[in-house]
Image (cartoon, rainbow, N blue to C red; front, side, top):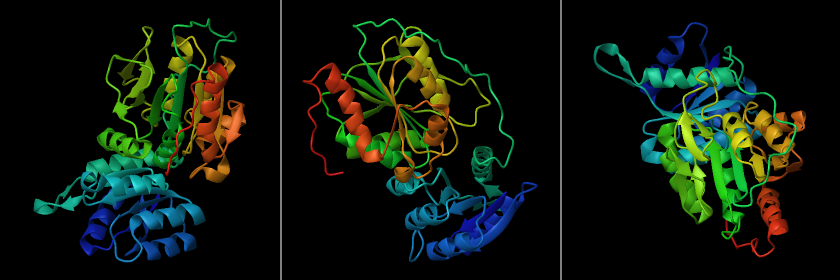
Length: 354
């Protein structure tokens, strides 16, 4: 992998350079001292991955990420002094297209670099996502039953949202525009490090004007709740129709996997609902969305024009998994319309300023 480094600290750049070069086959493409220089260097010589600091003079990391993803898209990993201390800024960068975030490694005693392992793990995962390192394969069900499941009136329809790169902003917009009166449970699977999940839940709650709750093992799908997957393990719906976390399949690059969750719902929730696959790199969720469509669900893929990265939705479209391909502003309307058809008293749109 060719990796660009963006940081205004000479010491941080040297530490990052050492970490990158510690892995055979990795090289430093260039080093930029601020966001403006990073945009220009990416335009002239696009690397496989950029390690992007957040706080720099002039153009900061959020704006640089936004411009790079608009002009010359490539994988971006936020590497900043303290992720937990600047969580709102981190989600702004992730909403603009950054894939993940990690604390900047530091040079410790005896010349050892503290924090290098975490950075290298994230680089390895991104390498698999962009096809620079061989992905592992895992046994996932690839076919769905041909028949629709028996409908059980006692079970309410669900709304499922799967997202990755650029997902936080897309999720915030959809949640902020959905009527609070919908008789449903909204379940979100966003590719995000477990350490960031609590902050993402709080951030989404602020934008949605409603509580977004992290999922606990054994949780029920209660009407009126918005639930967010909160660990690096995969979210699954059990045979008892409660939510659980599973480390398997361990070899999947995408964690938590949208496909794993969508397919478990297809097996165990015998009532159709709405599932949407939003902006994201790769193809996770496409097969699961197809299974849900075959079972009579309303399935939505975000369109290319409003996606930060049109990877996951594009894969769904290519498979014929989406019966609607919609720009982001219309997705909440389509979800509300599903419930309006079922119960006209439910879908009274609420105003939003988001």
